[in-house]
Each structure stands twice: as C-alpha cells, then as structure tokens.
Length: 140
Image 1: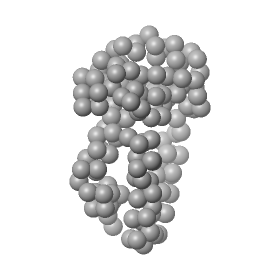
Image 2: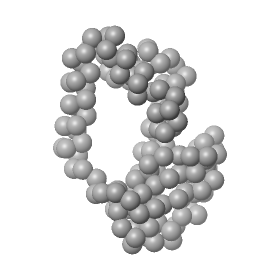
Image 3: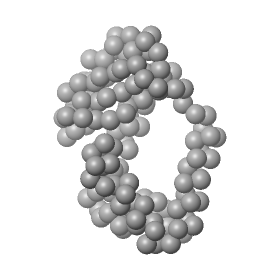
Image 4: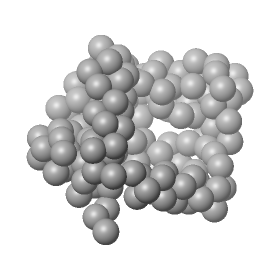
C-alpha cells in the first residue's frame, strides 16, 4: 500500500510534490517558532501576495503575537527566503484550540481509509480537485 506522499508524487509529479513539502515544512516551522502555547491559538489560514494571513482565537493572543511579530517575521525570512514573506497579519477569527493529537490522528486515519477505498481513477479525481488551480492558490 502506497503512502499518500508517494501517490501525490506519482500523480502530480516531482515539482509540485516538492512545493507541497516546502509548504508543509513551513507550517511546521511556524508552529515550532511560535511555541506550543501560542501556536495552539494562532493558525495560518493562507499566504496571499507574500503576506501570511493568520487567525487568533482571542484578541489577547493577537497582542501576545504582536510583541514578537518582527522577530517571527525575521526568522521566517531567514529560513524561507524563497517565499519572500513581507508581513504577517493576524486577525480575530475562528482559530480554536488545537484538537488533541488522538483526534487529529483519527481524522488522518479516516482520510487515509477513505482514499484507500477508492480505485486509482477516483483517487486521481480527488487529488486533481484538491490541487485545482483555484484551490492551490488558496493553499499555497
């Protein structure tokens, strides 16, 4: 049974797979940069015109983030210069506390189980839909 990463690489090709890995790495880096407490309250929603758009669960978390915003921006620019990030905007939103690891793992396993039930043509259709131009612009 192939892993999702292998399937994506096979279907989408090496270049898009590498781009997806870069963004995945970036999201993990952002989480680690903010630390467990703050990253549980602030989530990246998008990157638009080289600006990170994030949401916080409470105005207090926005203020906490703002105190070190320039530090976070500098670290991101140093680690990911090719993303050309020029700002981070954090707005009040629906960012809730992160789901416990067990819930997240169950959701991931559910997605994998569903994908495994589909035949190859159906899997390709789902992946094309996920990575359609409009959706890809919102994700990447």
